[in-house]
Length: 259
Image (tube, rainbow, N blue to C red):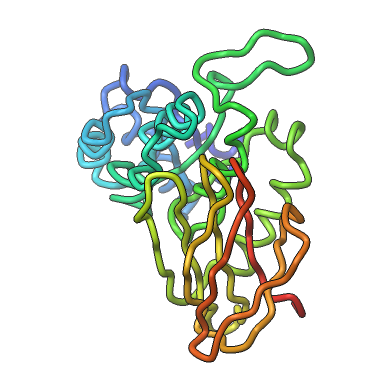
């Protein structure tokens, strides 16, 4: 109990939990929560891209410890290495974020996996720059998981990531319509909800200029690309649908022009 008093934190990150008995980490966490009289957040680093192994650990700890989604991160790495041959329709399948979102911490890079910076060598498995916009769209612009933003990416792509974080906070509410139905171009949209009256459509591709027919359920509304990758506006039809688009090898985030 003294540890909680001496180190007053709001949560814990358990390192290399694959090599620690689940009962050990869970016992420590239970004691700290009891001492704090609240359910402190906890996330474990279970270094395995097999999503079934992640599910097994969550089961062994009775759903008390979230896990970093290595299954998704390794897919993002594979997609950035494969160019337009990677099947984008499979990007959201067999990941912890998809299958157990409440206990998933999706991420693009960590201290173990990051691209070169300041002339230094890369570490681990990293996502190439050309796919960073797509990778962060997957972890920030969907209403799943509890995403982590890496400092190395915030340094290298500050403007884009800050805009994505703003969009996640304001625009990922209401009905979500997914269109993971093409090998290269995929997308999704949100209709907005009570208290968060902002609709949004996201389109991304690993191929040529992409287009995706998506609903926001807001008839005759003008949308602009929050990323500024495309400078024109688009308008939904009388049913609240539009053909949203994005540039080659990129992502566009369409938000209501007046908001």
